[in-house]
Length: 358
Length: 161
Image (cartoon, rainbow over all chains, first blue to last red; front, side, top):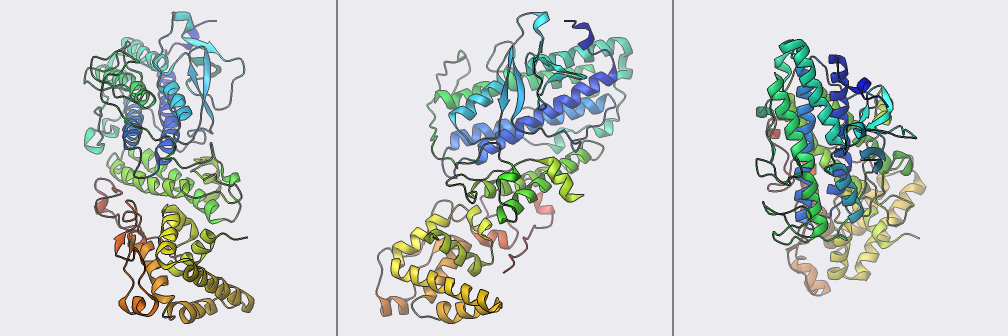
């Protein structure tokens, strides 16, 4: 297997990687929000806050990727047909890949999310890429143009992006950063708990952005806390399974902070990876699920505008998220007619939304 | 066979002009039904829901949907025993509060245990239809996001009858 061909040596290839990175970051959001809003109100506040903060940080990563893509003259389009994956989607986990589903909060769902965030460094250079014997349509973190080759982990995928930036900057100098600085989304348009949004205009700021994404997601170099004393996502979710909070200085797998309580039963029994076809045609439920998909498509359209020259629209897009939250919660509380004791969920089927609204 | 919860949702949809989907979306249906049954009792609740089903059936048979509203007003809302209970159901949906039944009601039909004004559950206030009806978030809950106050409210279309 030749690794040379997968090196990023052109600006076009780096743009492809950054677009795939945006797709990857976004792909975590429907599963995280589905688990989050399946929690019954008034219960599970520890779990609610852990998942919510991480979901917001995934949106930060999405925006950082957009800044990097814009910095090198690319153009993010979140409305492209395959931007939102069909679920279940497949993410790399070392030698094998695993399935990411939209499902209710449960031990299995948290294990699934841990797989997404797992820190995994390749044992050696030639293991950086793994050939998937049966490439699946919804495989994420694949090599652009080589769908059968998937990165060993998301961390390795971002490591290649960092290498690409350094390689191209060496070749081209600052001409690499030819994008319009007006397209950069600055922190005045994004408020969140952890991590700061940085604009990307040169190699240093690109490396800052990549480091922030890697540290928040998987931790960095085996450490569970980053330099800002922020706990990496993997360990935050692990707290829910271990029933205890981490403290700075703790070893992985052995949190020593206060106990936290999880009520695994205080959850709406939603259908996993629900689709519109699961809801009876003509039902109020079906109509509401279609309306949600259209609203989500509009939201992605607004984000695309915010990422292509109108960063002030991000404020409006975020208020749109809050309305989407209310629509998602409504769906999750509604039983599916004809299925005893199984509730609905948002389906995130963007292709269907496009067909309906065109 | 229709469960009492389904009949309660059908009555509530006609009485509030919100859809069953929206009513279920509040997550409060079971709690509101349990509350009215606990305080007003099975007989009154079943009578009220039966009259609603009957009004719906008559309207459907005649092909004139306005008849249902007329029958509901005449047989349920104007009935001294059922009317205050029906109005209490509507109030629960809109503001999440069970209001103590009027004195005339308790004098005529007897005081009921637990019949005091109270917020039905910890989530009932935030889930009140009132907020949806005016396109606002319940103050202190369901944060609408920074700067949302500069945008026009989103007022949902009323459910068609």
